[in-house]
Length: 402
Image (cartoon, rainbow, N blue to C red; front, side):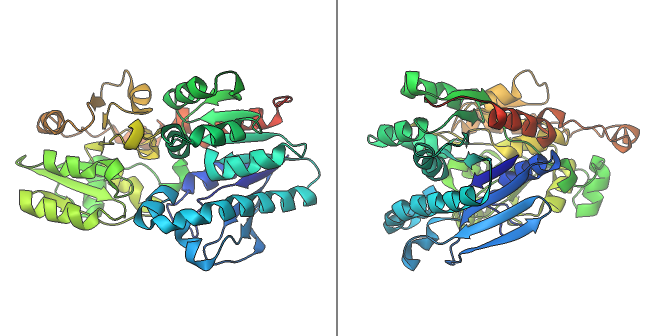
């Protein structure tokens, strides 16, 4: 099967975190024997098609005037527009460019299917094209675009525009599916629910806690709490810093990059919190950090209009390494962490409750080294091998749009 994958976010090199899960899913589909070509907007205005690796190609498309090209990559479309509102003018050109790239691929391929990532702009571009061409279209709905359109008074028109050209949707949480169905009602496409996954091979072998700490030069006796993600207000890392104030032997490492970095540093200094901000880490560095930690904290906030995160990949990565998670009761996190003794939920923006959880946190006990050496894989429920099978079924299914 040939699969065209339009997306507004895609890694630019091996260590780039942006849209990394898009490539991970494509790799799993390629291992199942499918030919994948990504259609990606290029901030530098390039128009070409390159072979990325066996079974996977990339078509780069130029969009809009040069002044609008900061719309993509960086911290994501929403954050980029917030930082420079005039970039909003580049959205129509971005949708047209993605549609042009999809159509160019369909002209070259005999029986291609389209798998769009994010309802907007890639999903909308593919749906508009699907209404005048015969191909099956599936969208992975990650959360941000859907929730922004739900909150925007004029967003319903774009939601219906997308739904009318989409055969099936894969929502990364039940919460997102419920919201979409409530708005779209009978116009909602067929759907499935599955979080994005983890690619264990990228993180290296799991290490005992003591060995990982020795490797990273971390005090074996401190309690280590980790955060992973973009340094933006929605992630709530300032809440984590404030909750850690006054707790002895607690060290924070928050790996990511973004506009909140300087503010986090200032807040940690003012409160006397031991905080390290190593920037965005390559997967090979994330694995040992998670192995060394006692908990991952996902202190996500609710944005404008009640926007929440869909199902943060960082939580999946932690669980796949045997690391428990402390997270806000928002988005898809409650359904992901339900019933796990090593995880706990706290109300959004509840600094006092997070502080209580951190104070009561016990150091994580090392697993039996023999079990680790035997390759015990805790991430099986979210392995891309399984998730690619779900996506494959949606792409191969017949029927959908009327």
